[in-house]
Length: 132
Image (cartoon, rainbow, N blue to C red; front, side):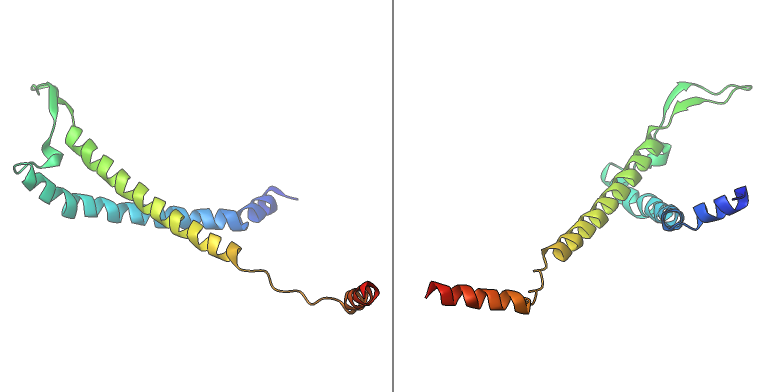
């Protein structure tokens, strides 16, 4: 097989396509969560904390000079990213929990009653007659 054919068979596997779809959906979901955190969740939290804008929360290590920009630790941006992560992790946890619950329901289904073969029915009847 040529390299092109090997690559084509690799790409056409179900797992690779599922992964590609998951990455695209995950990226879009990440943007939605980021917008939710930045535009919906953090402003009320900032108001509750006295009008704090989390993106402005920094610790300045070195002040800016004419030649050098200020060196800061942007812990407000880190806080927003941490909240993003926690929301995404919780959402994924809930999806996996729902998936596992659905999977357990499938496994709990009672097995179908199999028809007893005619030979076994005859043997059971013979056994019962012999017992009498």
